Length: 422
Image (cartoon, rainbow, N blue to C red):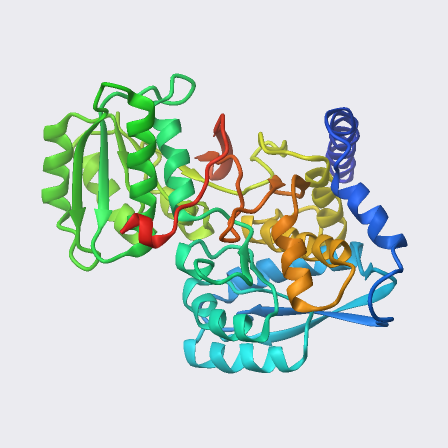
């Protein structure tokens, strides 16, 4: 066991050294350089001894697993980078308890602590609740994993690490029809009634297929189902009749489980099903053990694959994250998407504080919006006008119960707001 542990550590360290070398040749704008400047910077507007970063996350309740994973990433980054502009950085916490009523109290309490930046929250509802309060207080806030476009739209103080559902939809479309991906010419789309996130994802998917297919029409089936009563048998008949070989299906684990069960009974396992970022969750991975013959792919910010190698969006900071994560939490604790996104949210906050030369919320917000090509664990960050990252999409699948990267989009994808989607 000890030999295997040492071998794995050696492999990770060796890969880290190699990729750091590559990154230095590729670009001088590394996160390490940014933080080297951070540590020696002194000339801020006020001689602050302590800077507070707020952590607005569910530590209890049904969303606590995601919240705790994001906190693990935040705390790891803090343990590595705990000083900026000559001041110590401390984390202050507010537990949303996975409850909308408590989330309102939590964000109000956190704002009274006067943090320079807030990180959070996990979950669409709590992030939406926080929006008006953080905008009024002019405190820049970064959600690691909430993807609904409405969170950042119209709020200049809200940013996100993950991509929006529109962006991931566009990325999945590229994977579906491009020659380097699945190369499909017979694609189906399944939408969910009254779900703005799914509507955004489908919009991104459809517009990207229209862009890529030229005079052809690759989408040969487009249907909408109810979230409460999806009528699986009727849906399967439509899929079979359309003769598609790829179906975009941005639904949760429960609905996918029911559909996949019937798909297997019908012998339709030649179809590849494309999902959303929820498919990278442990619940979904566990569910897929019942469906070993179903082909799937989904967008993910995972930074480590089943064979312990990294994905196509790797940076030098990715390797640093993996090495330090194993050191802090143990070699057997594999970092989740949310942990990596929490880590990146903290790095982006620190870069903005350093670049702003100020502790004023508006100045830090402007600096955050102006960050360009900042290399973090999950990729390279530049923000659009609505606080969304402009990045490439990493497409993954599941093999032997673990996530494996299958494709990285050739180009970056940009978000659209709900007004354009509707």
